[in-house]
Image 1 (cartoon, rainbow, N blue to C red):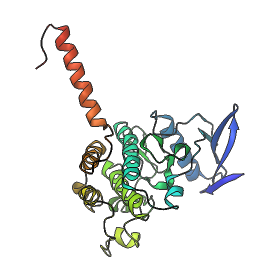
Image 2: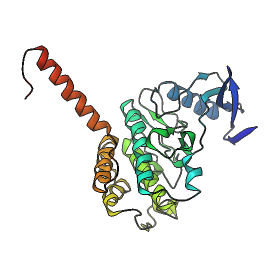
Image 3: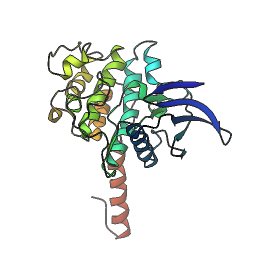
Length: 278
């Protein structure tokens, strides 16, 4: 039984080689729909990260992914807002995947709770899985089939994305900021999202959660991309610091782990050369 049908593509659970899978099937013979479908397949096939649902197999009309039990983050938010520990842990997990994507030259362009799975229903960092690269921009693709289009979900898309700009990693960071707001408040910051995107109004709901998170959320939600964190790595570092301020359990950040690896490598090189660690 199809789980969903959108833009000529059905999505359904099935079994493939005796494995539970999630299958997207192209149902229409339309050049634009076919181009979008194949674009998603090429991008998904290029990715390999534990926080991103991998592509298992592809054909001209089907994309096959492993089935991830547990539902979407949106389904969990429909039961109520998350507490600060859960919300920040989920966003750290999301940023783990986004850091990887941006390093691969991919911007997702449609990050939202509907495109975040929580494995086994666990609202934790390690359970986050990103899906749906149908709107993505990839530098390694020879042609951006979505160039100049206003593609995205209004409540989660950045203003510059609304005007057709694609490929700016800070657009994804705006979406991450909205998602953090949504996790804490139970709804996105702008009731009239299209009005905000078009510049008709600036009315935003009050920032939710503790004050330690407000500078990060405020910066991420800025209309001006230059005012947002400059990278997903920097955003994650800021979120880790906010968690420390709040006395939440320490969760390692990618930047901190990278620094540890650099120090370990430097120490190993000095040791091999007979030197001493400074």
